[in-house]
Image (cartoon, rainbow, N blue to C red):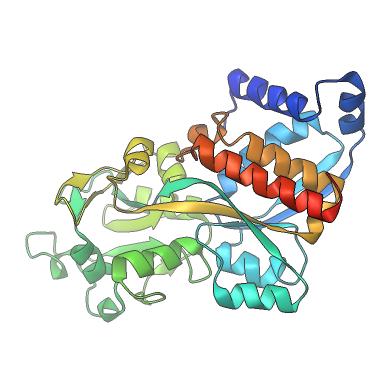
Length: 321
């Protein structure tokens, strides 16, 4: 992702404000070292990477490692076992995950960091679809479609009698969870005969080269590749209007597949200076333009302030303000 000079200056100003803008404060921050380990959502990954890039300019002695594992995969394999400090998430933590974390001595702290518009994409040569309803999406992606709805004409007889090739996230993804719950209407319910991957760029590449392909992923990946694939409008079930996915329609609430994005921080990890400063930096810069530049909807000023208030209260509780 390209970072702009304005964003870097905003990030630098934010860091200076946090440190009190004093020379001694700058010296203290320059001396911070250590590692921040992050796993989780492929959707949130671009935001966290962008934040990490700016953070690393100001704190070169801190190593920030970010891996895209899927929301559920990150919780299960890395965050709950205590192998990382932060888990990116494109859905709220499940009760079962929360209980497993607490049983392992991990207390997750939730921060809302933005909003996404889950995007359905097709090949740019697809000239038979511009808008889809939830009913049509369910007919294509629902579990009953497995082995039965295999051609475009199986969905609509006016569509080509050609084999349909489907690409999407795996069941360990928060995007998968959101899609199955909000589109299909049942958490985890999804057709089995599709190409599942945690690499969103793989979905982009597959749809780009295949006229009869379809996929779904986060808005940022579409916006970065809008010259390669075509986004499908989704019919808002309340208004009946076909709405294009965008930052604006996600912010207004018109787009029916808008969803919240989170980071979950291990409370114990906040005792580490590097993690503490990274989380402060992350939350301070949610309105600096980074979230929008990546391709997501930023949180409001009120949410930003609530996040920082929560963080400060926890730091006070831990005795590491």
